[in-house]
Image 1 (cartoon, rainbow, N blue to C red):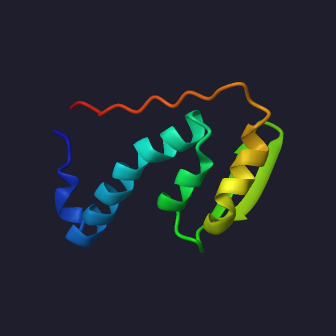
Image 2: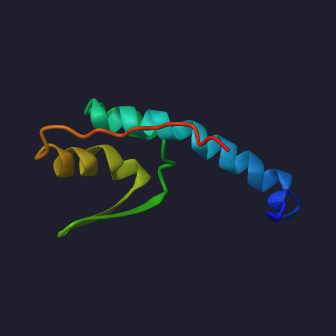
Length: 88
């Protein structure tokens, strides 16, 4: 029988998880449409971001995200993030 994890997650954690999950589509839109200014709505200015993609790596703060992603992804013709709901 599967374990019921609902009692292990406090409501404030769940609120954070839901809030973050609502940012995924905006994050994907910012990257896929190269509208990097939208990242200011995704990350707090003090967020510490660390990305590793293949042999490429970069770090930045949330406040630097638009310029960092622009510099990294301008080399890409396109990106495609597929966001879907997980079904039980």
